Image 1 (spheres, rainbow, N blue to C red):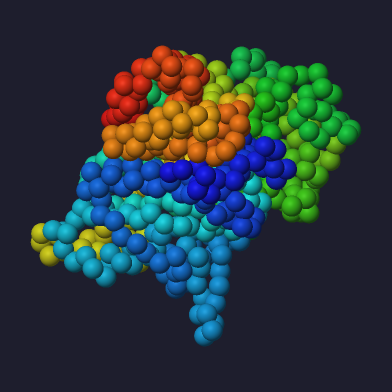
Image 2 (cartoon, rainbow, N blue to C red; image 1 turned 180 degrees about the horizontal axis):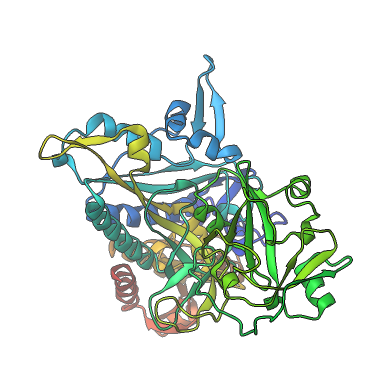
Length: 574
């Protein structure tokens, strides 16, 4: 490709709308252009990167026995209503009606549609296991689209669905996909970690892992163990109870007036006690049902763990102040577990029952109890791990202190079990002619998100540093002076020879100053740059620069094509 013919409109200034590095650089380097909030057009270089990621994904899915299909973007509401998810997805779902007022949605995901396909086509155990995947656009009406391709309304995703006879088969399919995902992100040249995660709205009966590209700009916080393979999203990470040494009081609990002290910080300061002595008492509303939730005062409640522990509500939120007053007889900052109504279930993190001499709300505005003892003075109906993990806590597998990193989620694998096959009656007949439910898994890769994540992880002050495996082109040739016949002729000869050697090359044949060409080459992020100049040519050499390291070397003209070809081949085989 000749740069003079390439639609590659580069920008010198950072667009005001772009908040993160990947968004800034994709706009500046001419990879994407905004069509609407959260919706983008991919220009030629951007599309080349997407196609390379798609090809890596496709090869790894096919290698594991996946079969590619293509399902419609527009899905009938009836299928979503069968599974009960029409309401669960809420406002994020793009909904529409046809001229006959039949309801549809633009697919945010395809569990319903693929399960409907399988229930109509699979009859026998002999047809299983079945791995079906597609690479296609998805649509989610984000409240606030931002960060370019990181959080858009339209995005490109690979989703594969496994159908097996039983849990053992699902485990095998899951392991296949886990391995395939490791290969995909390694082949894309990315530094990543698989981490334990929450299933969210996809749901299901089994485990799930997210694949996180590590980057300082990542939205998600993950904890990992430097000594073993444990890693988890902070929302999912398992917490071991860590008791605080404290002597139990000898007498009964006492009522203390705490005027104006309603937050944990204010109460701790007023009573001159550490936050570890306090208990947070929070009244939660799950689809209209109330729960009193207890965690130690220095801990942060994890609402995802809470919702999972309580069975998964469509809406789980802190109770409105008027409901708190109605139920507990006080304002929000004075709620406590002593003397709660009989019908109100008390849910606690395990650390609460290990405490002694607790300070908690007294269910009287501006009052707290001190010297409260769990079990003696209040009941706990159920205990669950309900808190957020903290850096430095012990690894749940080996006990080593955990460390933290930021990550960008680019893929996730789920064990769905029979959640969708049961709702949609996707069955097969076993060897004995008995009808059984298919056991399912779901596996997604954000293709466009992977492109953005690669830039977040690989950039510098000059622009993008593409991993060679997914770069739009492997190499750019920059003739310093096109008016010099020898320079121009040599550049054209190298361009032809690199193409014949299987190297994807670009020649910058524009009538521009060398500095402009170099800046654009760095901004776009071509992994290799061959500079052809009269001075080096006089010695039979050209200059070869590696974008990632910034290293430049003079290479004999007769050897440069073979060297570039070798470098590209080694990277692609990695």
